Length: 207
Image 1 (spheres, helix red, strand yellow):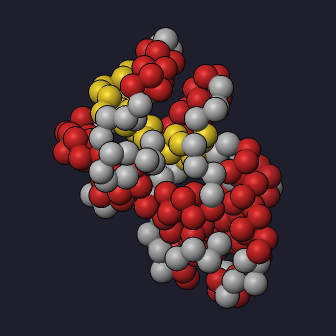
Image 2 (cartoon, helix red, strand yellow):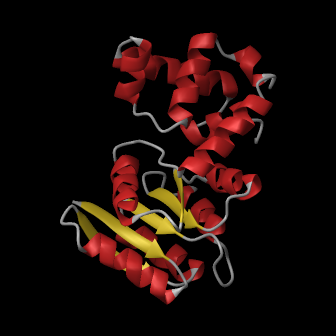
Image 3 (cartoon, one colour):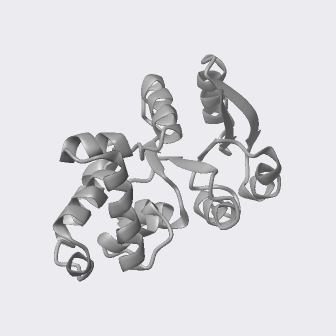
């Protein structure tokens, strides 16, 4: 069972998310918060698998929350749930450590799919957000980072940024799962990063 926490200050939206999660027997909702401060204090003791968080919260933002918790608890996965579509907010959230980014007009079924995808190692994004990420990638194709890693390593990293799982990347590139992991280790070493989010940020020129 996937354990989940929600951070959302608009009560009607919080209730809607709560209903979606509680109606699926694959999920266990641990707690809901209406501000980042309480979430930062209590989520570490709850140790949820997934946290769904808004960006615009009363004092500290959802991005602040992600940043503070991910510094200590890397295994907790965050998905941003927001109205914001601008590039700065998207990349700030990813840079803070979020692994997914979906908009508040996402359908209940897609929200469920996004939680499952995140839990399985993917990076779910609403179509509009994915297009922005890819557009940024295309604009930064001349990024010097591309000179540090091989063409195959770039292919692995690009597929990872689109939300593909390691096994799916292996299948698409017709290589073994161990080879995918080896490429990623090489990428992290060459780019001097610790995880996939930092690597993708460097590739897109957002570091």
